[in-house]
Length: 191
Image (tube, rainbow, N blue to C red; front, side, top):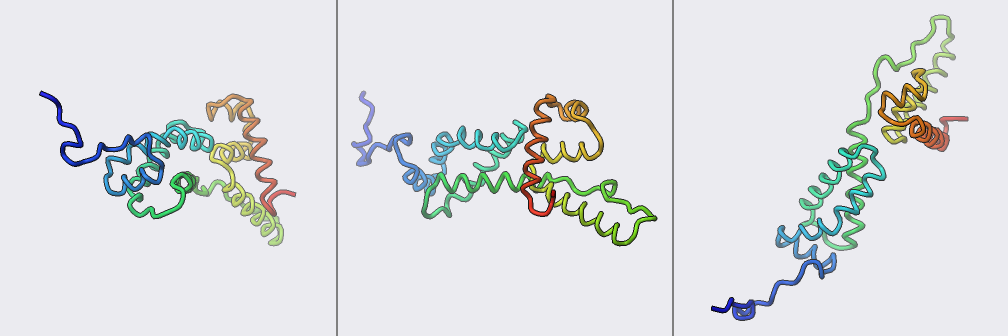
């Protein structure tokens, strides 16, 4: 017995998802969530590489990538127009930023400057202002760079930081250099 064809039932053969444009796939995924898989397959590698270029921890990069596609899958019914790829990258950037904010270290009381009793109120104000500007500037750094600067400020050397962060000394030096360049670009932080 011959297998029935799609045409016998008055239906067209379903299109090959890999041959569809992003817009066509989005429209399909909006009505049939099963079709989202092709968008995922099409972009997961590219998005994960993008995340890994901004996040040093491979496991965290995988988690962020997973969160991105979960958000996209939930939001795709509301996607109306424009470039799907641009929309996907915007969600990715926002997810990375959210992760940085979520893991941003809180200021510990030990990090607060303790004024010298012999200091004048003006000296205390200047010290507090400088500390506040530095802490604000550290928010502009990537988490690893921020941790390296924090450890340097606590008096650790490159070798000690490398051991503590499980990095090579050259990687610490490179990240430290990039951190200081980034800090210099923040207005009002460094002379």
